[in-house]
Length: 317
Length: 153
Image (cartoon, rainbow over all chains, first blue to last red; front, top):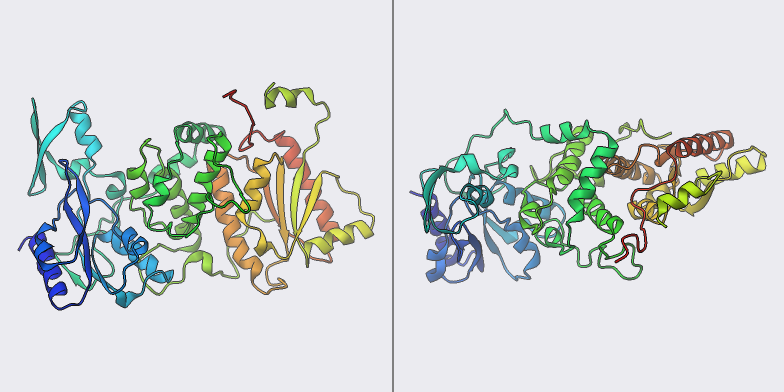
């Protein structure tokens, strides 16, 4: 049976048995290569659920932001499941209030790459068949391997199969062990501080402070974000270089030991800022210093909530 | 006139360094240095905090944004924290923060950390000397400073 059918079946069963009040999944978007989150409450609507290589959104975000009473079902990829684990660990949701339909994921398609292929011409139709995407426009047609157009975060993914689920649909995907997910960061670190500063000022120059990166992030659930605080107002909301830079520094600091590299921030950014250059660095530090990866299990204590007596401290005089 | 021009006009520039000292060890260490009449550079502005664990990354970044040329955070030695574990937690936060700051291009030596106990007046003076020298060598801070009207909007 296809994954889509199995998702629908599980969703239908859960709703019929009144196990859940609501199922959060994906439905067809209004544009080709787009899907949109679906909130299914009735059994008739289950047919709207779909699954393909454009189900890129991190649905864990909705668990934290929607105030839903009762148990919620959620369709979760590897990264979504990691975010859910995070949320459970941080006591934002309870484990028995969420019903996870795990979907082993083979990576999501980066539309931008495909659009570039056709010189940004409008794609009118896209169909996915057996790991390939057939794209049609007014004057062009083509078909691509999905694996050639994955998001950067999907290319370095090490947790394709959800690590936490109530039911799993589809076969486990083999995790890649040959990827060095921090290779890019290591290379970037070799540059001089001046070069790095120049790179980030150039990137952040285009930040319009829409806070899309924050709003889409399943970690940013604070009722009042530090940047919205007015008493005291720690940092300005202007587009001054330092204000913009500081917003990003602190945002990334707050992801330390929590970021699961779902890539949602970078996808949400309307200005195309290289946000993963920052988040990935902190992820790397946490792995190297404290041997911790976010969202793998429910037991390990998050790195900034604990300590060891012999933690590295060469930099302290 | 932009900040670079201002800096070049100031002769005999002296760095401004903000030091966050924990009440129980480093602040007392600074006190001991004073009582013992140990000489150290007058470039530090001390802010007393209850514990190095109280030092939020906001403090450090805000200091840099407000124009401090250097920042020093100093607390009790690991194991000696008045609140038992405050400095252990702080140490992890500082490690992550320092790595981020240096990664985006803040020079190494702008943001400093040390453990100074209440009995280490000598060490306090040495730390201040070292930090002042390293910040002096780097010159006036230019990154992360909020420059009002710097772009003539």
